[in-house]
Image 1 (cartoon, one colour):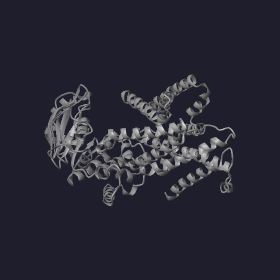
Image 2 (cartoon, one colour; image 1 turned 135 degrees about the vertical axis):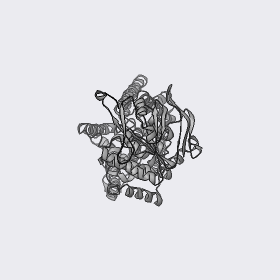
Image 3 (cartoon, rainbow over the protein chains, first blue to last red; image 1 turned 180 degrees about the vertical axis):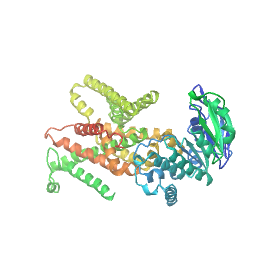
Image 4 (cartoon, rainbow over the protein chains, first blue to last red; image 1 turned 30 degrees about the vertical axis):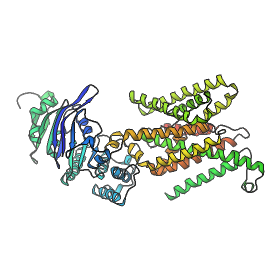
Length: 263
Length: 319
């Protein structure tokens, strides 16, 4: 369980996150939504220990994360940033194997168990067949799958994702989220920033909506994704219906020129 | 893969053989087995120490180039283009002025640390892009070199020629004790960097990813930069400012052996050393009996290499 307790974060004088509290239970698919600049990515970075909270704390299973050593924390929590610019042309296999770093330590000697874990994940993600291809040669969809595989090789109990679908078309977006949902079903807690409200609605069990660094709303997709909330937070007019297949809220944006009459 | 490793060792063997046989005086292989007294002096007092110095300097510069490129995520990074060598030369110059010849490597180290700190602080403050960081390094190099030239020109007129050679990079004069200290230190540090290869793999994924994998980024970056400064300090103390070795060799090595540092850093050590030995042998023999500074050769090939990357637009592919 990840417990965010009265946590604030400032960058210089600017307050980016203001007194946030939230509880993310084991096995949840927890979505973080909000407009650009509302502090979503900053919140993820605090949860991954990349940034330190200015006040308040974050507890993982009852322990303040600032007291957990970095390598040990990396065995429980892995992170997939929205952009990974891979500097060198690593082969897919060796790239995924780097995810074992928290286990192998700085000298990076892989045991047979480490190798087996890497092979298993490559197979599970169906990327074993191109293990010797270079990262740069892959399409965006394939790349995202490889990045995810690297994060999973870390054997985390919580995986934190920053817009995992940002470079992907609708087909690849659903495929990558299906994979993440499968991981979630197998027991991994998922915390993800999602830009697309409808994807957030379909996949997340609970949502947290940020506005200017504060929590605006928190709860199930049905509770959070109401037109009143969205209009206030995003400053735009929307209609919210239900997806006829899943029954989840579905958000329609409306161009300004069509804003006439009642809803 | 085995063939590639065999090729690297073959190049090393050829480099050693060439370094021993060629020079103002040519030593054929039969002659090596029946050496006169003078021959022995030439060989053991001049050629072999020079060969060892060339090797260790080339090895050190290549390994530091590869590591700097990874931790700064900059394909053009190396001790020369970042101004680290220039800083080391300025340190040495100050050491010479103070008349403390025995502690020259310390001054070289301090100069190197000073210049890398200027580069890093300025590039973080101003959010420089990769090419801009390199421009800054080159500018620092010019600044430091002109200062060194100024001081040398004012203080000891008769040494002007040798100072000039040294600024271009020249392996013709160095004290024996410095060579021994340099060999031990550079080899030990390189071994440490090889064993820590995984750390530089992880760093090359970027700060966020590296930190989330549990890497202590700040500490590892500082450690690696300091170790690189020690190596560069020794290299510059031994052979002056030799540019581009640390740029060319890591790129070629990565092309053949892949980017994994555990695999490529040892190759950098051997290939970089061999390259500089060959370059120095060429510098000694091409316009016999005049000896060129080795920096002329490395500068020539380095410049061509740089141009080839730029003109072919393969800047990205080179990684």
